[in-house]
Structure formats: C-alpha cells, structure tokens
Amino acid sequence: MDGSRPPPRWLPFLVLGVGLLAISFGAILARFAQGHGLPSLTIATLRLGLAALIITPIALWQSGRTLRTLSLQQALLTCGAGFFLALHFATWITSLEYTSVASSTALVTTNLLWIGIASFLLFGERPSRLMLVGIIISLSGSLLIFWSDSRSSAPGSNPLLGNFLAIVGSWCFSAYLLIGRRLRANLPLPAYVWLAYGSAAIFLLLACQTSGTPLTGYTHAAYLVALGMALGPQLLGHTSYNWSLKHVSPTFIAVVTLGEPVGSALLAWIFFGESFALMQGVGFVLLLVGIYLAARGEGQ
Image (cartoon, rainbow, N blue to C red; front, side):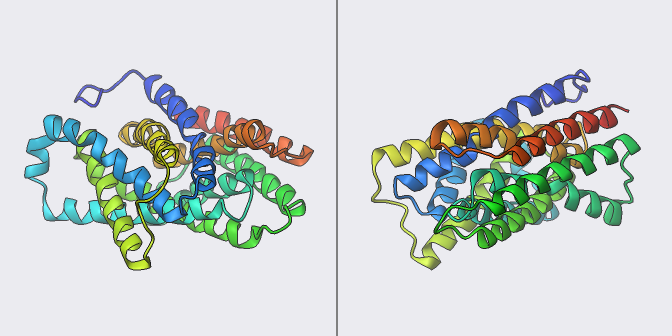
C-alpha cells in the first residue's frame, strides 16, 4: 500500500476515516489509564514505546536497507519529529486531568489553523477557496465547543490550564506533521513510523527518568489499557495519518482530525457520563460540515 504506484483517489480518504475512528478512542483510553493510577507522562511513554516495539519487526523486515542507509539530515529530521510528537502527547494527555474530553480534543485538533499559517509562510501554499471555507467553519465549531465547556466546568477542574496544554499539544502536532511531510517524501511508511514513534518514546523515557516518574508497579489492567492505546489510536490511528501524508496535504489531514472531538465527546458521554450542551452539539455539526467542505476542496 506504500509502493511506487499511486493508490486509488478514494483510498486516502477511507484510510483517514478509519484512522479518525481509532484516534477518537485515545482520550477515552487515556482517562481509563489515569483512573488506574498511571501518570500522564507514563501513559504517553508506554503508548509510544509499546507501539515502536510492536512495529519493530515489520520495520526491520520491510525497510531494513533504508534504515541502514539513513542520511544525517533524515536522522536529524526524524529526531525533530519524535521530539514534537513526544511533547504533543505529554501536554495533551496531561490536559485531560484538568479539562473535559470535549474541550481538550477540540483544542488539540486546531492543527489546521497553525499548519495553514505555517504552510503559507514556509512553502507558499494557498488552500483552495472551498477548503478555506471548511477551515473557517471547522474552527468555528471548535470555538463553540470550547466556549460552551468553559461556562460549565466541573468543580475542582482547571479549564484554563487544561485548555492551554491542549493548545500547546496542537502546536507540537502541527510541527510533527510538517516535518513528517518532508520525511515521508523519501522514507517508506514502516521506516518513518518506527523512527518517529521510537525517537518520541526515547524522549519521553528520558523525561520520566529526569522527573522520577515510574514506569513499573501498576496493575495488569493499567498496562492492558496502555497496550490498547498503542494498538488502536497509535498504530492504527496515527499510522493512517502518516501513510496519508504522502497522498494528501497536511492541511487536509489537520481538517480531518477535527472530527476527533465529535467521536471522543460521544464516547465520553457513553463511558463517563460527560454530557454536552446545545452549543457543543452545534459545534459538532459545524465540525462535520467543515470537514466535508475541506474534503471537497482537497478533491479540487
């Protein structure tokens, strides 16, 4: 699926849809892991570390020669991508301790705003008019969700801190996508995924060692939840995005990620009883409309 022949036009959109469904479970599983006593930094480390370990045999088998001939520039760019990916998960998962799933996922998926600005400033890329309309509508939906949630925050929470951490996570993920776009032009998917996830896990492991955050001593259920995060949201979800980087623009991928708050909020309502107000529902509708328009714009 990552060969030299271009895939059918519809395939990247299908892959992104499956990836979006898997990623929507990320916040839910992170909340479950926190409920089992796992610190946020430990959750991020286990999620990426286990994913890197699982994909190691595939990467070495399919891309061993590429990995052995990696250039210095590719190695440095990979470290940069891993660094920003590590920061993304560390800040975003921590944000779930202080704000609702709806607000956290809505703000962390504002990547398209930052990627659109960076793509224009760095690469001179101009989005189509229809995609621009989709971006504006999607961002309006995200802002409605954030505004509604900030008016009804639960006692003892800290929405300001949680929302700020989610925004920082969005900045970091935007940088990760932009660096990954350049790397994916010359690296096969298994090699890139293994390098990005592995380097991010190393950065997080160093952070755990420096801060004294333990990786052991938790229940079997806690580790099972961490494994589920590695298999589902990380390997299936994020790898779908990484594969698509070679076939659609980073701006469109960022628009697709705006569907995550919809799925995550519905799952949070099912599993945790986190209800959402009318304005949040309107925001979810705007998100979906924006994603549809951006998809049409990408097709043009």
